[in-house]
Length: 120
Image (cartoon, rainbow, N blue to C red; front, top):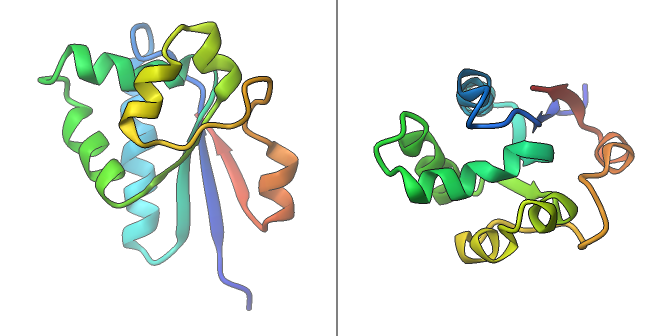
């Protein structure tokens, strides 16, 4: 049996749907800790979490975010959305990889790479 791969694609806005984004991080670590190859992909408004964490270091997501950065669990952030929300430079500073400026996270690319996709 092939190894399982799961991509958690977060779309939730941290300012209006904080709990959903919190759970995206929780689910990524649950999967990882269970031995499943997984990663978190930020698209849509979810890219704003990087800026939100910088502005509010006491945010409940901060410890999960820090662990995700340390362990390389945030695989990609949407370059198009980073530009749209004017936070591209903050994402670059965070060391999270961006898609090209005019591209979103590629669902077909993830599927072709063998990932099952969960959107949050």
